[in-house]
Amino acid sequence: MTTTTTDTITAIATANGIGSIAIIRISGDEALSIAKKLTHKKDLTPRYATLTNVYNHEDELIDESIVIYFKAPFSFTAEDVIEIQCHGGFIVAQSILKAVLASGARLAEAGEFSKRAFFNGRIDLSEAEAIAQLIEAKSEDAAKILAKQMKGSLKEYIEQIRDEIIHILAYSEVSIDYAEEDLPEDLIEQIKDRLNSLKDSLSKTLSASKSREGLMQGFRVAIVGKPNVGKSSLLNSLLAYERAIVSDIAGTTRDTVEEQLKIGTHLIRIVDTAGIREADDEIERIGIERSLEAINSSDIVVALFDNSREIDSEDEKMIDLIETHSENKKVIYVKNKIDLEAKFPQGKIAFDLELNTKSGVEELVELLKSYMDTTNSSDEMMLISHRQISAVENTMANIDEAFMPLEDQELEIFSFHLNEAVKEMASITRPFENDEMLDKMFGSFCLGK
Image (cartoon, rainbow, N blue to C red; front, top):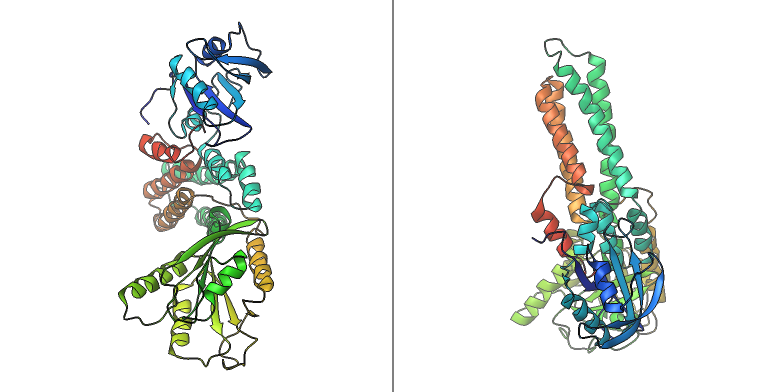
């Protein structure tokens, strides 16, 4: 985004399509004068909803709408902001937007309202990212976490860590003035203890954030198993309709089939994979490769085995692949077709569930729900983006690098690493100027936000 903040910008802030209302947002120095022009009002009272006609630039009536004026700096962007709430639909909102543009505003770029709020000091980057993710929240628990971060909970945590690093840094800077004297042994030990305490806090935050990533992005559940164990039947039972083709022919599912469904308060992405086995058919081989990709990218793996068949090399390969590719993932082992004569050997696998996918999967649904609910049981602060996680990882790396020069009393090098750590932590909330990074981040927002 290479635009100036003196421009008055506008966009439709509601989703496309037919609805009861649509909102057109205007922000900038000319917002009020444009609103007066379109409504024929001499003035608008700040924070009062005014029911009024809205006209286009040719003085033709477009709609009867509610207009609200937010006077700077008491608005989301800290600029004059006008919101026009009109009747929803494909035509009315676009007609009003066209009239606003004809009156001197320009179309806002993606995330530009939030970017202005950031530059004008209304929000920091952690709050901006929380806003963006709240719009696309995949669970009620995620929405609660993001709502807290919108109110600055992550900012407070980051400031505490940053202040602690600066406090340690102050010891070093003062001691540099007395470089010819050896530092007291207890001072070095105090600094080490404080650094270790910082690392411990950051490590817990990092671990909690990675383990709860599915909570933010939406859990991905991969159904895996050799051909004909009932993967597609399981998917159909979970969805309560025939989404996947079911047959006795091995290799019927040759690609991954993805569907979205809600379990408890969580919106999840469930993937029915091709049967994993040795394949001569090129198309089937590609499907198996995609199955392995689905395992690698999933949060939860449902591994299905056939109670009515003896264990074979394909089962053995399935077990080996799960053990190899499911590190840090929840694996649920399910024995299927329990209504048929049991041939699968006892004790080979510690099954979490035994069921018949065609008659009901309520136990599996409850197990999935229970696991997803427990991912939010940690009280640790949570990082909500790869950018934030990377910044904390870099902070910890700089703290690690600082131990050796501290031991050798090379305080200039020690201070350098701590300064880098401070910069990394600051980048989570309010980084040093980096237009390219900010453009990319805000560019991923919705139009009108």
